Amino acid sequence: MTDPAPQPTYDYDLFVIGAGSGGVRASRIAAGYGARVAVAEEYRVGGTCVIRGCVPKKLLVYGSHFAEELQDAANYGWSVENLKFDWATLRDAVLRDVDRLNAAYTNTLDNNKVEHFLERATIAGPHTVKLASGREITAKVILVATGGWPVMPTFEGAEHAISSNEVFHLEALPKRVVISGAGYIAMEFAGIFNALGCQVTVVNRSETILRGYDASLRDRLLQITMARGIQYRFNCGIERIEKQADGTLLTHLKGQSDPLPADVVLVATGRRPKTDGLGLENAGIVPGSHGEIVVNDLAQTACPSIYAVGDVTNRIQLTPVAIREGHAFADRVFGGKDTRVAYDCVPSAVFSQPPIASVGLTEAQAREKLGNAVKIFTSDFRPMKNIFGHRPERGLYKLVVDAQSDKVLGVHLIGPEAPEVLQGAAIAVKAGLTKADFDATVALHPSMAEELVLMR
Ligand SMILES: Cc1cc2nc3c(=O)[nH]c(=O)nc-3n(C[C@H](O)[C@H](O)[C@H](O)COP(=O)(O)OP(=O)(O)OC[C@H]3O[C@@H](n4cnc5c(N)ncnc54)[C@H](O)[C@@H]3O)c2cc1C
Ligand SMILES: NC(=O)c1ccc[n+]([C@@H]2O[C@H](COP(=O)([O-])OP(=O)(O)OC[C@H]3O[C@@H](n4cnc5c(N)ncnc54)[C@H](O)[C@@H]3O)[C@@H](O)[C@H]2O)c1
View (spheres, rainbow, N blue to C red):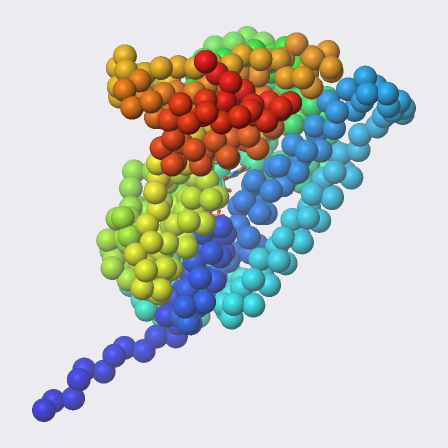
């Protein structure tokens, strides 16, 4: 009898590159199953969402929203005098909260006995990572969860523009902001700066804002934000940015003779998977055309010992998706469970002012799929809050229903607190409930959410 071949020994069972939403979740769940886990993070534990994404952004949305609340306060009998806004106070409070969360995420790793290296890591081979310090570490499995990075333009003077990475650290509140792009980040920061009293111009290459959302909601947002004073330059792009002697910027637009003066130019034209210089070639992994890591249903790359989750795979760039992918990976590879991520019915929201929230098929998508067998129900209403606040702005709720099965295929909302209203409705769509189920539900009055069950 011959001795069995010796099993290779590795420093860790799992080495995760990137301690963001997906990486932290995968690390702690795998460690919970008894795996020996280490993670490398080149910037700050917590990743984009916590450090320079969802969380600080939402706090700025809250902070800027006080402008509207304080304006309305007089109608409710409050006299609020000597109103002042101080950007530095809000900015620093937000950054302190980011520090708190950074510490909380680091504690989570410690409490789960996940070793962390605060340095950049690259792939040196199918089972080997190399830290910036030069140390090489081996692992049975490597998980790439390096997220994405803002795409920055290359026109003359582009170095004077900032991305969402820098926007949380501005020295002072700009008087005039030019925003390039009309996607999530552009529309959220247009809302924040507009509410804080800045003059905002959105420059977009097409006439479409928030591509992918239901057209009626996009139109409503455009209408409301224009009435609130946000200006749009459509079908054009930035040609160059010229820095003036006084430090301000002149934004020259392609084909337009009137450059836009600005104190800040924010570029928000999408994010690219962060794979540059990652050493994928050392494991035989060829990135996709957008730099993404291509994975199969099990999050496995072309190299069987290397997996990838989250934004680096360029599927749905949302925190809850990255978290689910990280969790499912750990369940499958270290927990013996065949957990899968369902990509249908992923709810999403744009924290514009007013916000948009959506789940399932838009009207256009449903018509493309089902032709005429689609029923649309809408409620175009003026929220009580807006009537009392003398605001003409109207909310719009839309249900997209399969005319044959009566199933609600999509729910699309714009109006105050729309994201809070949507999450519950997303459960109904995911569960395959019908319009009759919505109708059979008694309204909760008075609320905006009751419109969901009152559309006939
Ligand atoms: C301004 C903004 C607002 C957003 N708002 C929302 C929102 O409201 N809701 C929502 O769901 N999503 C939002 N997102 C998207 C969300 O932040 C991402 O989808 C999510 O963070 C992706 O998680 P991830 O784990 O894939 O990557 P990340 O969270 O980006 O984590 C990747 C980590 O890897 C690190 N890293 C990269 N390369 C290396 C390397 N070679 N070595 C070591 N470490 C490395 C990075 O520093 C980072 O910490 C927002 C994004 C932005 C930019
Ligand atoms: N509330 C949220 O959930 C939230 C908030 C912010 C960001 N995010 C995530 O982060 C991702 C990145 O956000 P984003 O706003 O940067 O991207 P986006 O994809 O939402 O929008 C990109 C915008 O830039 C424009 N654009 C793209 N390429 C261009 C080019 N070469 N020149 C000029 N314009 C161009 C597009 O037309 C679009 O208007 C989003 O896709 C989203 O998944 C989510």
